[in-house]
Image 1 (tube, rainbow, N blue to C red):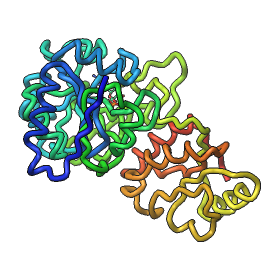
Image 2 (image 1 turned 180 degrees about the vertical axis):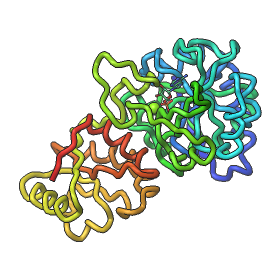
Image 3 (image 1 turned 135 degrees about the vertical axis):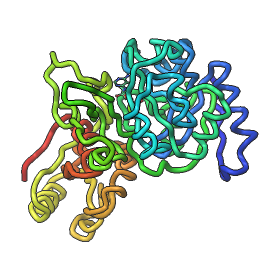
Length: 348
Ligand code: AMP
Ligand code: MG
C-alpha cells in the first residue's frame, strides 16, 4: 500500500487536506493523525471492517479494544450509555486527554470493542484531530499509531518508521504535546455509590479526577505485575508494552547513590541512560539521553517515548532510567516505565 504523508503547517488553512483524509476514513481506509497525547491510527469506529484493518496494520491482538474519538463530548451519548458522572467529567476535562469507558450502543461493533459490551470514548483537543473527526462525520477508532509492542509515537517520524506502507495516509502535525497516552477511567457503582476505576494513568491525574468524583480506585495492573492467571480490567494491560529491544533497568535510590552507580556502570561498559538534565555534567556524554529536569514531570512525559526509541538504536546492552515517583503525572510515567522495564527495578 502506498502511504501518503501530508504535513500540516497551519491548522487554520488545512481544510482541503482534512476533507481528503475524512473521505479516506468514510470509505473504510486508515489515516494516522496527531493528538495532544500521542499519534492515533484512525478508522471508522462504526465499521467492523475498518477495525479489522486497524488491528492488522498494528499487528495488535483483536481482543485488545480500540478507543473511539468524538469531535464533541455531547456526541458520546450516540455511541455509549452516558450518565451524570460522564457529563461532569466531560465538563471538567473534555476536550482533553481523558478516556471514559461506558456501556456501548449497538452502532459500535464488537470488533471495535474487542468483543466487550463496553466502549472507551475520548474527545481529543488537538485541532487536527478535532477537524478530522468533525469532517469524517463518524467516530474514529484510533489506537496509538505504533506497531504493537513498540513505544507509542510522539512525532510523525516514529509513525513513518512503524507504519509506512500499512496505512493510507499520515497527517504530520508536529510533536505531540503531552507525549503519553490518555488517562482511562471506567464509570462504576456499588452500594456506596459512584466511583471511578483508573485503568491507565495519563495527563489527567488522580488528584484532578478526585475533584469530580470523590472515590478513584487505582486498578492493580497500573503499578503491579499481574499473575499469569489474573485478568486485567483493561485487556491492553496484559500485553507487553512500550518495550524497547534493549533491556531497561529502573534505578530506585536517592539522587547521589544513583549518580554514583551510573558513573561506575559507564566506566565498566557502554550503556544508555535516560538521565535528568541536572546529571549531565556528572556523567560521560556517550549514551546520555536527557529527559528534562528532575522536578519537571511534564517534560519527562513529553520526552519518554522518543528517548526509549533512541536508546534502542545505541547498541548498548542495557538502558538505565530513574524509577519515577507515583505522585501526580509521575504515576503515568511510572506505569509506562515499569512496563518498558518488564518490572525490573534495581535498588541502589
Ligand atoms: P491504545 O489504543 O493503544 O491507546 O490503548 C487503548 C487501551 O484502552 C488499551 O489498553 C485497551 O485495553 C483499553 N480499552 C479500550 N476499550 C476498553 C474497554 N471497553 N474496556 C477496558 N479497556 C479498554
Ligand atoms: Mg497503544
